[in-house]
Image 1 (cartoon, rainbow, N blue to C red):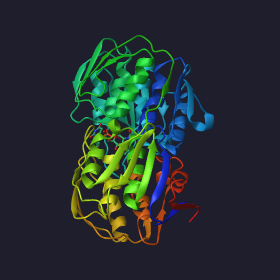
Image 2: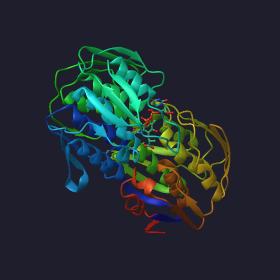
Image 3: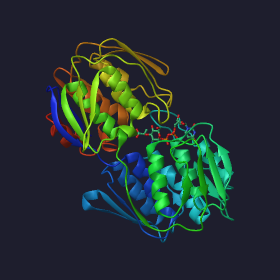
Length: 422
Ligand code: EPZ
């Protein structure tokens, strides 16, 4: 298993290009199942999760080719000959459950393995099932698989989500595009990835309003056509790399960065004493002076502070001036990076969903263990400002969500290298 070695090496300078969003691409790709005509995605990220989704769609009968060095995904689902999403693929990546809604809408039946447990929380699918049943589907769980059918097709309906779940909103939204009549999703998720999905579905001929607000309205249509759609910028990759010059010093321009994608995060950085400047090409970020100030954070659905940037923010708060309190409200087990940061000399107390971080002058490099995608990158960030060497093990987690991380960080002067087969 590969590891990544990070040597604290002082200020960073230069530019980092931000890729297309993993969490947008993972819901845009299943949209191909809604139409017989080709769907092409541009600005696609080059990640192992995208390869897993490709494998899943191909197992259902879709054609998926990665072109232009993997940044263009040409897909066609004119001939879906399998309606079973197999456990062997789904267990590798929970987002595989996003084929359920589109398959049900297009074919009238679908069998999708339940993803099972996850490091950061239980992550049930009750809201996906609730919404699809509201559209008239009959769903039962058998041998670890969800068996869903709607022999007479789906029918539009009004519903209220108990929680603004991203995945449930995406599955229901895709299914509703081909349902007869009007669907109203109240308390829908408002993430930029949802808006990107709606933009793509509209380009395919869907009738959708209200995406980005708590209420989405969909007028069902008989069929969807083909389209070409650019994947939105990855706001989580953006936020992650914005912290690199803040933690290590220096100034970095994030190409393609947009403040509107991560407003709540930028507000916290501003309060911590970080300078964020909008440029013609993106965002320029630097630490204003000396140590950043400790700030408190509470994660929340968009437009709140993203849970996917909580671990990275904790890495920054480890050397902040003062004490910060981070509350994780989305997932019940998302502080596994805290004890690893503790191995680097951080002073963190975790109690349930609350972590109290007492800022220290300096972290020290150490061998640490990656436990999930965002936890692993928080250890890389911490290593950028630590004395000595930090060896982050099990970096396969990173490959799922960060394309060419070593190249991007060494490009701005960081001493980061991949160590194979440790
Ligand atoms: C998406 O996961 C993202 N993944 C996650 O990013 C992100 O952390 C999450 O949204 C929240 O922003 C993708 O887009 C592929 P949810 P998703 O449904 O859709 C509970 C990363 O690091 N819930 O909004 O699974 C659930 O247990 C990943 O890139 C139910 O109770 O998130 C959780 O506590 C990690 N029942 C909360 O809602 C349901 O049916 C949020 O889940 C569905 C969800």
